[in-house]
Amino acid sequence: MQQFFLYLLTLLLLILSYWKSPAKTRLAFQKAWRAFENILPQFFGVILLVGVMMAVMNPQTIGKLLGDQSGWLGVVLAAIVGAITLIPGFVAFPTAALLLEAGAGLMQIGAFVSSLMMVGIITIPVEVTYFGRKSTLLRNLLAFLFSFVVALVIGKVVS
Image 1 (cartoon, rainbow, N blue to C red):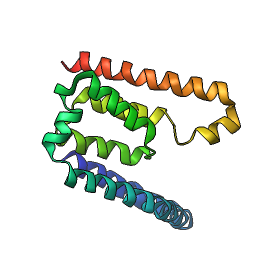
Image 2 (image 1 turned 90 degrees about the vertical axis):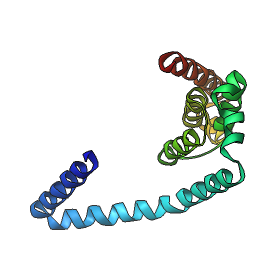
Image 3 (image 1 turned 135 degrees about the vertical axis):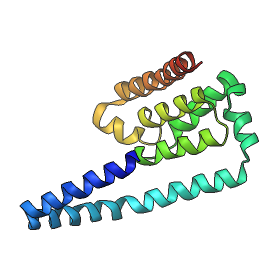
């Protein structure tokens, strides 16, 4: 029911925007469509990858590797995978939800998402160019360690 109200509110605000300035509203739609077209290939690629992974790995395997019973080894594995993977935020959270449904633990997903968002192994060369080697490595190391703090906090709060 809450989604219905959000969609209704969005529609009403869109009508208000069009009423105030049809030209600006059309321009906004054109910009939004171009942004959507730019994001779409990335989004499909990640969804395809996650879909294949979910098809190949059954929930028992995901639960064994990333479930609650995997403990800190699962947290470390999730943090490493998150640090290496380059996924935009709008795909990371639905991916995390799919992994949770497949049997992954909350601490493990917390470490995965936080290292995914904060650590950039793949983007290190670009970051070194702008921030220097020392600050890049320090930032990534601290962000990686912080993902374990996030997992620990989630483990304490939820259990």
